[in-house]
Length: 74
Image 1 (cartoon, rainbow, N blue to C red):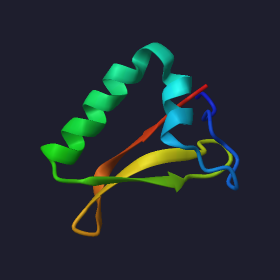
Image 2 (tube, helix red, strand yellow; image 1 turned 90 degrees about the vertical axis):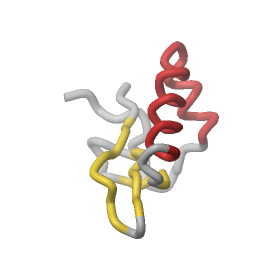
Image 3 (tube, one colour; image 1 turned 30 degrees about the horizontal axis):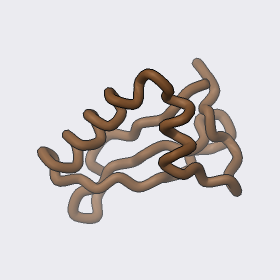
Image 4 (spheres, rainbow, N blue to C red; image 1 turned 180 degrees about the vertical axis):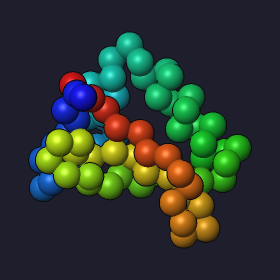
């Protein structure tokens, strides 16, 4: 499995950092995030999943995990 692109716990990525890494996949990222937030009414938050996976966008709805996280691999 690929190692995450953002694996430093103390270096929380900004949206600009994520979009820079995604390069040509930015539109797909924005579409998935937008759909999840509007249709599923879930809010995305960055969460650190450890040194191998790093930071990922986790979605929560009504305070509970909505069942998905999106991470960026190298």
